Structure formats: C-alpha cells, structure tokens
Image 1 (cartoon, rainbow, N blue to C red):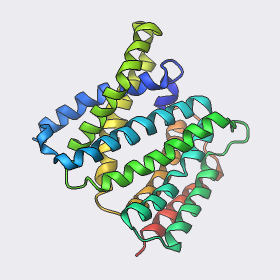
Image 2: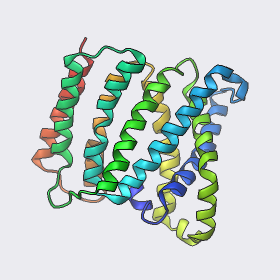
Image 3: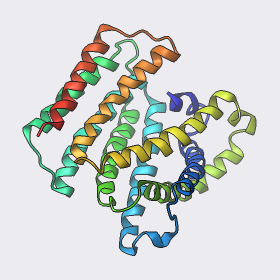
Image 4: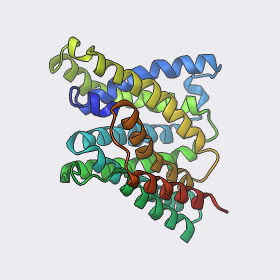
Length: 270
C-alpha cells in the first residue's frame, strides 16, 4: 500500500534509494541499542561475497523490480505473480541448501496459491501487463534467492547482515537516484505528507523491522517452509484496505484465507 502511494510520484529506483537511506539510520540505531558491532571486520573475508550477492540480488534487484512491477500493473496482479516466490524458494532451497523436496511441501504451495487467488482476484481490477509481469516474476525469483543466501549467513546477527546488504544496495543505487532526485522532482513533492510518510514507513517498518524479522525467521526453519508465510501478505493487505480505505471484504477472502492457513499448517507438518 505504501509503495502504491509513493511510486506514482517517485521513480522506483530513487524510491528504493530513499527507503534504504531511511533504513540505514534505523539499522544503525538498532545496532547501537543492541550493542552489535558493525565494524566490517565483524564479517569474515570469505563471507563478503555472499553479503554482496545478497545486497545486489535481494535488496537491489528484487525490490526495484517489485516496485517497478507494482507501478506497471494492478495490486491484485502483483499479489498473484509475487505469490510464486514460495515456489521458487522450495526449488532453490532444494538445489542450493539440499532441503527436502516432498509432495507435502509442493502441495502446500499449490494450496496456498489457490488461497491467494481467492483473496486478491477482482475481475474489474485485474490488469494484465506483460512488462509488469516480467518485472514481478524477476522480483519473485530474486527474493527467493535472497532468502536462500541468507541461510548461508546465519552465523551473523540479522541486524549486521541487513545493515551491510542495505548499505551495498544504497551505494549501487546512488548514482542514478541522486541525479533523478536533483533533476526530476522538487523537495515539496517529496515532503508531501502522503509521500513522505510512505517513505518513512517503507524505510523503518518494511525494511528495518520487516527485513530483520524475515531474516531472523529464516534461522528457525527451512527456506522452503518459511516461504509459505509470504502468502499472508495479500491477507494483511486486504485487512488494511478494509480498515484504512474502507474496501469491502467478501466471502472469497475468508475462503482464500482458510486455504492459505491450511497450506502453511501442511508445510510445517513433520
């Protein structure tokens, strides 16, 4: 929702840049409060390659393509396409981490995907955009790769890993973002309350709290199981739409939510 409110004013790449510029300060404060050492030497030299790949693939490529795809298509279409992320996590978790690939995990993804279709599908607002779909599929695949790579960095604090991945992305996005912000938009447009608060929300809540919580959760379960929890995104989005925007909740929402919960429970069974 916050992305939709701001991406029509700020180009996706500088929007991610502003989001991460906000997040880097929040992560620094969090590290100080938690007494986490952010010195580069805290990460072993051989693991910096993984940190860079995670920052480039996940924090840069995945988020930029996700916000670009969101701009080019509808929220419903975006939710359906990005629902493929858990399926990619099952595949990459098996190929890279050698996690178990069984019928139960595959069926749980299918079941929850059907649930997402019930939750978000709206025939009157379902826009098919080839370019938007391509961006969203890339976002889904790269986020799945990010989640698998994070499992290989589980020896480090999630705040430490997130801080450097966001910092790497910030540096990569800086040249174009700074040029765009200086030439294509005014400060008044950025400080417009809806846009400004959306950027703060994306930086502090979605990036700092969201990424850290996601990274921490990956420590306790296989990536293929953790991915199933992403199906709750459209459920939360629908509830927020009802509470904030007074959008209706239909019977299909409850059917879809039930299927998503069933898929999550099935994936977590031994």
